[in-house]
Amino acid sequence: MIAKTKAIKNIEKFTDSMPTIRYVDPEYVYLAVQNARCQVGDVLVKEGDYVKIGDKIALRHGPFFEQPVHSTVSGVVEGIVKKYHRCGKLVDFIKIKNDKKDVLSDSYHERTDEEIKALTKDEFVEILKEQASVGLGGSSFPTYIKFQTDDPIHTICINGVECEPYLSADHRIILEHPDRVLTGAMYCKQVLKAKRVCICIKKKYEDLYDCLNAAKLRYPDLNLEVIKVGNYYPQGWELEMLRTALHLDLEPGSIPAKSGVMVLNVSTVAGIYQSVKFNLPVIKRNFTLTGDGIKLPQNIRIRVGTSLKELIELCGGYKGDENKVVILGGPMMGANLLNDDAVITKACTSCIILNEKNYKEEPCVRCASCVYSCPCGLQPVLIMQAYKNKDKEALKMLGVKKCILCGMCSYTCTSKIHLTEIMRKAKKMIQ
Ligand code: SF4
Ligand code: SF4
Image (cartoon, rainbow, N blue to C red; front, side, top):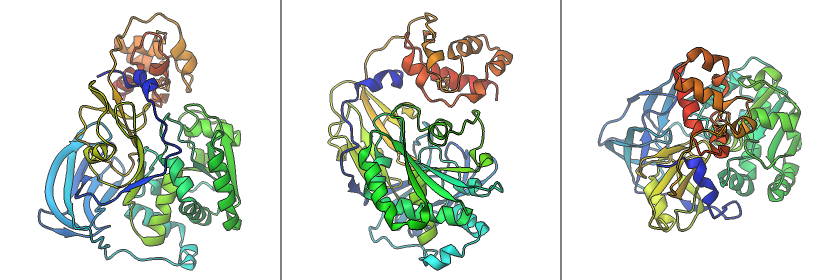
């Protein structure tokens, strides 16, 4: 397995201008009992049970929260299987045979605009909690916890930057479903009593700029501003985005709500629309499958819980005879998988499949490229040394906790050292 950040320069195709195709009726879906944030989960169904879309089938236990898992199809539970999760680990998945009738849970109901306007913040939070709304840009952080803030929020800042190279799932959701995004934004603005909403996009995307500015005419109360930010990585990191868009300079580790700003990803906001309007969890999402190791890179609308292997077949299968590098998530921050027996979960934005190239790590030449490229102002080369010396005090002093695992140091390292992996291990060492 090679350092993935060394191989991403080989991806050939961009998918941002490709319309989303649909693959929403797989034979089976697989829903994770555990995930990166919740190591433990209770299964609430057994083999042979019939479930509907939106029924609770498991309950995950996180460090300070619980999270229901919902069925994304109607059909029959066939048991528990092990597959790869986007966190890179093998976890338990509940396997459900899809009857393709799309029978909705008894908890489904459509709220009128008046009912939504009348929701208290506690009621809104409860909906997000019950429908397991999480950050769909990849963070998977429970959204209801963000909304529980007592800090007054004046601005909702929607992150449509999607800064990791080659990803386009959020791009297509804005272009193809702007009303879901803007209606979700309206619900958030109402409940937080915010004064304004802004959506940040890369400045090169004129199509998104025009689309959002046309759509906002239908939402005069939204007070929406579309803000163009830089085209570079990691412009979508929330603190970098706030610095550029709102001239708000926050220290790594700061919570934007303390400064009156709520940051939400664009797909998360579309998911909030679904949960608040229909009392349903996210059951479908946009997904990008790309890389030089796949024949037909695509944006795909998928059912949450679809097997990655089926999507690879849908895209014409693998290209080239080389070994493949499978990255679930973006090329900079995603997880390398040992094989493609994986599942697309709710917060999974993309998969990059690369043809393996032989890159060899060389000794550090003290060039400091990693230092210049770090958006958190860290010194990865010194952290690497402290990690090798198992010097926990030095790791703390060098501020490794602030590392956001963005991948830039690995990407820029002259000696092709997989520094981000070292940062990950160093963070664990001092936990
Ligand atoms: S992964 Fe590397 S570049 Fe990114 S924040 Fe951490 S140390 Fe800095
Ligand atoms: S970029 Fe790589 S070679 Fe250069 S100082 Fe950092 S670790 Fe050493």
